[in-house]
Length: 230
Image (cartoon, rainbow, N blue to C red; front, side):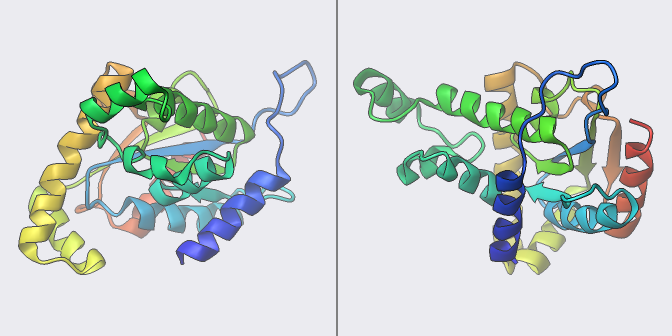
């Protein structure tokens, strides 16, 4: 599944150019979606289902809707010829202050701050092209001023997310609980550190969907209807 998604990802990138500023008589930018999420809300599943659905109901000539999640974003940056050793600081809020300081002094690799800027530039480029669904990385904050981008936040009660992580990632209940309790604060710190805002603030999003009360398929329908209004 990941391999197929990567092929689709790079096919999308290689076939597109970033549009220039809109001029009179030019077609409006193609829509895009960002998905922020609590750990274990099924964001990747929703994103993949959404891409397949939008290909049917909101198609664009010559391009398919494409999902850029955590693994795919890392591959995008690798495609930009960045060292693969940077993978350890790619995850949200996983950089070490000591490592970052040493890197800055000796120019071993870009600091976390520089990496976040590079990731944000990539997000802006993808959103400018449109027909993309970007999961995580503060994409809703980065693209907040782009009127053609719909912002979605997925939430769910902790116990439901733990059960889902057990099932979807083959973890024990203890491992799943620790995963959720580690990931959520890490993502919150990432956004707070680099974007000076609160990822949990609902005002950043057009839609906040509880995936325990609304299933993946119905979530896709809601997002699609909202996207038509953007």
